Image 1: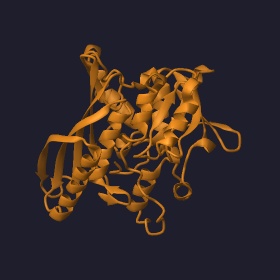
Image 2: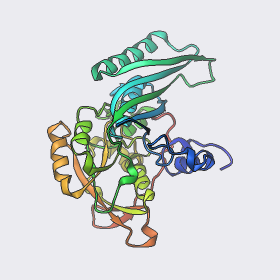
Image 3: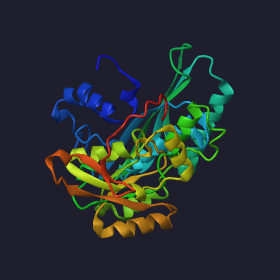
Length: 344
């Protein structure tokens, strides 16, 4: 812990330990919860402030990816999609974004123009306002090409906070996982040509996942988009929040063959690999089949139940995730950091 490493920014165990040590533990408890809502006390995809009968949901993130253009998108579309999805999984209707453009001196102006056009076109397609932002140019070598921080605003009648997960809940995945992380890894290794089936899944979840959340809101107790750290990080965070145990079936997890084959060849666990167009839901067992079927009617053809939540059967298993393997064994799923710089 003498210096920051890339692992501290990878979204796994190291990230959360550092955040709690450097930030959360320094903020008094009375300042962690926002005005009548949720804040650092829940460490979710965003915060919520009570405003009358509704909540203002706020999310912020900084997007940095290499290469900045990749199969399926670019840093601009990734920034817009990621910000929208952080609002969606908190049960909020996205309203508006503010962005910052931090660009390195010497960056190609036509390329920047193209990226910003893609950002604006994405906002137009979603009917979301861009209400302000900032623009900075840094001396050459002091920032790596382009970074885009974004703050998103949305409204929700009742935000989804992942601490509401409870024993008996079922875990649903909405679409194939690890698409984005596999694509960026192949791009950084110069292996896209021999892996042409790889493509980032970056996309907004407003037309598929959000309607399902709104329709079944009383029964949905947790929701997250498994970006940095992947499914493993998401489920471990959920389990540790309430000292529960989550059991999943590896064979039930949707993965495209091209993604699985590439990651297997690289020795990378798909469960720890980022997705940018998927959601994970913790749902009351009473409606799990209805939620899956509704997601499929909205276009999420791969939506599937992959596991369930239980009280820890043993003190050692409190806050743990267990995977039932394809051959019938059981293994712990731990949040592993894939040491990739600039992935999302």
